[in-house]
Length: 299
Ligand SMILES: Cc1cc2nc3c(=O)[nH]c(=O)nc-3n(C[C@H](O)[C@H](O)[C@H](O)COP(=O)(O)OP(=O)(O)OC[C@H]3O[C@@H](n4cnc5c(N)ncnc54)[C@H](O)[C@@H]3O)c2cc1C
Image 1: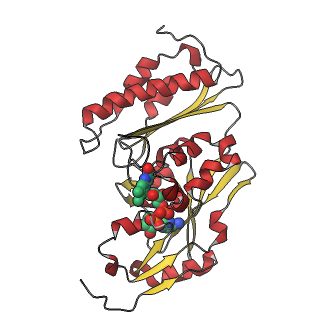
Image 2 (image 1 turned 90 degrees about the horizontal axis):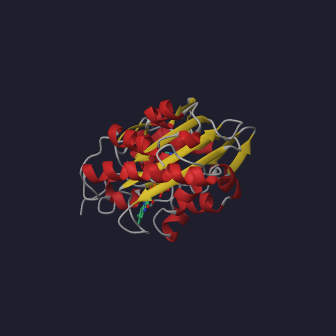
Image 3 (image 1 turned 120 degrees about the horizontal axis):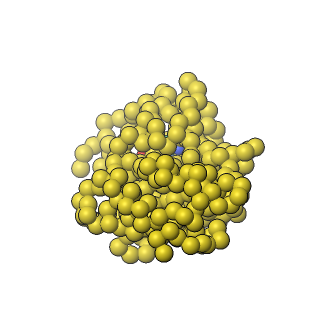
């Protein structure tokens, strides 16, 4: 086994400012740990490589879900279990709660955090597509100040983000949706629990005041590209149209055509493309029945 050359230090501050100071001081020499469910697996047999630890577990501010004017702020240390049971999440961002409920096992959901899921930036991270579909922004803090970025800006590759060593992800900011917003979350994997997704889809549709015309749409997928992606062509096809007159098969085909997944142990490129189309159609049908049902043009 390799030996550590410098003494390891462990910090567990109570205030964000203190954590930022420590991060600034140690830079690349320190690892941030939240629930540890990704980090400790990744470093299982090479923990000696981590010189110093910054544990966020005592920072209460990072554990809140709060509504501030017309937006929700979710602290980076909020666990998946918190997301799953929160009444505010159920009310405003139901598919985020459903996605959290699909993560791992109860033990993983009790320890794993939303911040860890985001910063780990696995293309298969379950919360990423729903967060993107709800138009999430991330608050990044360092002693130099605050930066707010969109999910699209934040993720730049598999396990790669724009987060700098001296920055912490502190909050996830979500604009409160209108009451006429509907969502569907679908995760495909080889079994129901403790499974890394083969493909995920988060579809969020906002209706206009007539409850029929599509006002806005976000179609986001995970595990089909190096980062979570939005299929913007779906928006172009749907916005301004009567939901009942949409051709669901055509919209499913757009999703299939616009993704370019790879083969891996969880599924081939062809399988992912075919499933993407099918789950898009299913998600549209779910939204259709949630908002009153109707007849489709292709019936
Ligand atoms: C058995 C098992 C099953 C799992 N199942 C699933 C699953 O079904 N779906 C899924 O999406 N994931 C799954 N995971 C992965 C993992 O549980 C989640 O990604 C979890 O959300 C990670 O959060 P964490 O708090 O444990 O992160 P940690 O492991 O503590 O941290 C992950 C990374 O993020 C960094 N980090 C964490 N918080 C911050 C912050 N606030 N600011 C800056 N950097 C930060 C850390 O330095 C580290 O690089 C599973 C893991 C295991 C072990």
